Amino acid sequence: MNEVRLYRIGSDPEFVFGQTKEFVTMVVPASDVVGGRELTAFIGTDGHPSTAELRPPPAHNIRRHLMDIGAALDMVDLVLKRQVKYPGLNMYAHPVIGSDPLGGHIHVSVFLNNLGAWCAQQANLMHNGSDFTFLDGRDAPNTADWSDRMREVITSYSQLAARREIFTSYTFGQVMSYLLRPFENWIQPWFSRAQRNGSYGGSDLDVRHTSSSKPKAPLFSEWAYYHFEYRIPSTWLTHPLLAYAYLSLTKLLMLNFTKVLPLALQAKLPPPNPNRGSYNDEWQAIFVTRLRALLALNPIITNDIKQLETAIQTCSEQREMWFTPGTPIQVDAWRKLL
Image (cartoon, rainbow, N blue to C red; front, top):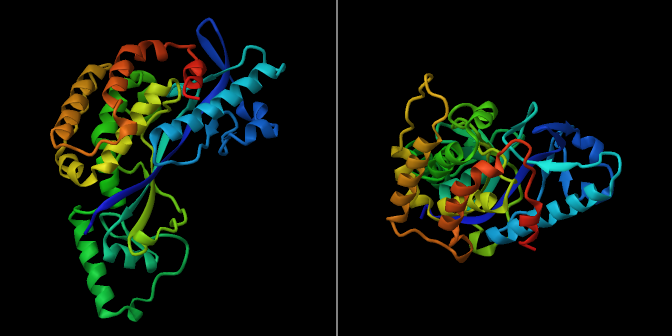
């Protein structure tokens, strides 16, 4: 009961097209580049004409998702080399380029084994940790039609949610932020990251519920189904190992949600210090401490995320090179995944 079962992980990471001269990248609006069917099959602009966004299909296996991203970047790069309007055009993925903030939003879909949560969904309701909200634009349920049993299980579910003992949008955000927030604050370039999302990398409100159809899975027919988007991360497209680290941390957290939740609810952020500049090193220490605390609990680790610690070490060693102004997405590294 109350088990969380990961279904899929997805993403919609952003980047820009640009030309770099004297370490300054001049952005070319993505709407000028994304015109033919070759590119619109892989990327979109999501209402922002200067920003491009990848839309790879979600997957349970992290390496599968990375391969889809690599295939998209490979195709986009080949098209860029053939176009003549903007010679020397590259793809860039830093937290902010010019005036464009670039996100690396991560999508997570899960099943929750709680009858009250399932009943609430049938009534178009979801508890966010504070109160019930409507799942979509349908009318509010007629609670007068509820059976005594339905009232009982939904009340039990709401009590667990209010005590933050079950999967909700709030506890999802807390668990994701347990590792991803300190990782973001350590590994991303401090000042452009802070320009994008504030000195601490976002807020607890940076979780969105996303409507998607519940998969047809007979084993989970009476499990609740949720699809949330975690919006705190800056774009991580600059190198596949950086992407692997973000997505593998996500999978590690979701595979071990019930073990992480008590740690996440007890974790405290250090108070902001307006007299300091960057302090990535302090956030590195916080991240390492939290990761070690989770690993000490003998968490589930699947084959596709077994290289996580190696990837984190590489991110630590290469971050300054990856985020040097004017450094484009490392497309050749992405091609090696294919």
